[in-house]
Image 1 (cartoon, rainbow, N blue to C red):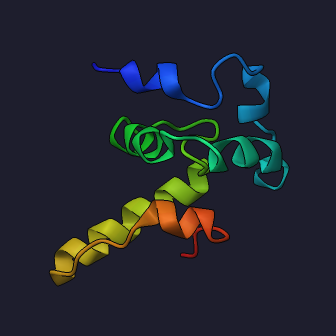
Image 2 (cartoon, rainbow, N blue to C red):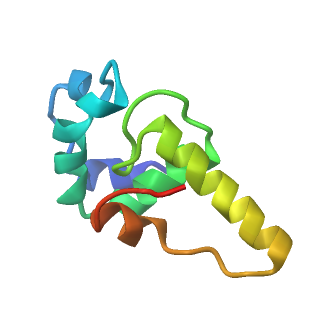
Length: 96
């Protein structure tokens, strides 16, 4: 598993507890770090492909990642291209 991108992440060196909020509503601090991260897209894809169930990854909560997965699955079944989730995240959140 190639995790070289982690060395370039904005969260490197930050107390990881902020990336594991108790509720999605408490995810603001982590999402703020992610919004400035140069590897946000790679991090999000890692979390989706490895089915990370906890924490904020690539600026998305578990619930938001599940929505992304469902949208991608629907798009595939309909033969449509998947939307750019990272752009969606940085513009205000993931709708679903």
